[in-house]
Amino acid sequence: MAIEIREVLVKDVYDAACRRTHDYRPGDVIPISRARALAWHRNPHAQSNDVSLVLAYVDGECVGYRGMFPAHWRKHGCARRMYWYSTYFVRPDQRRGGVGSALLRHTFDMGTDIGLIGSSAEAQAVYRKLGFFEMPAIQGLMLDITRLNYQSLPLRALRKLASKRGLQSRWLDRSIQLGVNTNRQLVLRAILAQLPDVAHRDGPLPDDYEALQDVVAPTRFDRDRTTIAWASQVPWVTTDPSFDTPGYYFRDLRERFGYHTIRTGDAGACANIWSFTRDGLSDVHLLDTYAARFEDTVGILRAVFDHALRWGADRIYLPIHLAPTLYGSSIARALFKSCERSFFMWLGAPEAESIRGDIAALSVSYADGDFTFA
Ligand SMILES: CC(C)(COP(=O)(O)OP(=O)(O)OC[C@H]1O[C@@H](n2cnc3c(N)ncnc32)[C@H](O)[C@@H]1OP(=O)(O)O)[C@@H](O)C(=O)NCCC(=O)NCCS
Image (cartoon, rainbow, N blue to C red; front, side, top):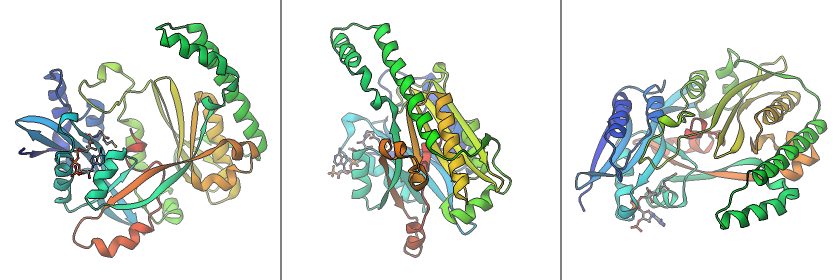
């Protein structure tokens, strides 16, 4: 089987997405949604000749793709170019034939560092086989409020039974949702009552945001104010169904999407909160936090819980380093569970060995990679 590899550059990616979705025939593999292509086209870290997509063709048909977007990682103020891997797909009938590996090998020839956070088990098998550095998994904390909904267990059992018989009941759905809403109020207000009362407010990131990050995390993946503005203004997801892309394996559709920056205290402490609703489930993620003092960290946590109440969150995700502050609440300590995301790196030639130590020292956030945007 001859595999032909082609590239789509940043400058062409949006037009290519529009053309492909316009000419779509059922069964075609579409390598990117229009929403994602538009965001990548506007990536402030990208140069127009950077690569957005690597495509694999067999017998003239597109059978797989690797999406990637340019970024930087920093070491004590010096930026080093890299790519984040994003989407990765091979048509089921072509799997285990070397297509996925051929796509990745092509990206190695670019000689750039590559990072990848969070992936499927089969993709991880490919990364291991090709010799990526497997970094320690990134730890987080998660509260799933829907799982606390014990009082609606009989109703959920009834709904399951009904759906097996092809029946749907709005009354059941509403009653179950009412239980989730009540629990959300009870649990989050109880946690808030156990944390010190520290004020916080919505507000823009401070002017010295990058300098703050340099102190807290000198070696890190770069998510500066430009990147955050990009993520909030051109999300890769769309809340407009007409923008959905047929034939695209990944779902870039959300019912709601929001990005909030918050401030607390008088020492520049700030944080980013990212929220979205998909398939009726609402998630709130705390991304970056910059807080030197204990009370500022408390203020950030309070902002997250207040936001989760307003947003109607079903699940809340926090970075692991907040555990000591969060556990000031015994209820939070009992209810939050740990969660993790895989992390792989490929170091571009030629000085890969010399920067291995820097990579090991990288401050990595649960939200790095395309997760911040997707
Ligand atoms: C991940 C994916 C792109 C791999 O594509 P592929 O063309 O099958 O990959 P390759 O044939 O090059 O596999 C290379 C090696 O990876 C390993 N591997 C790949 N798929 C595997 C699987 N399902 N289970 C175990 N090992 C696997 C094997 O070692 C394989 O070599 P071998 O076949 O000689 O044993 C493909 O499985 C896919 O599209 N999956 C669904 C989408 C997805 O999960 N994308 C990632 C989202 S984060």
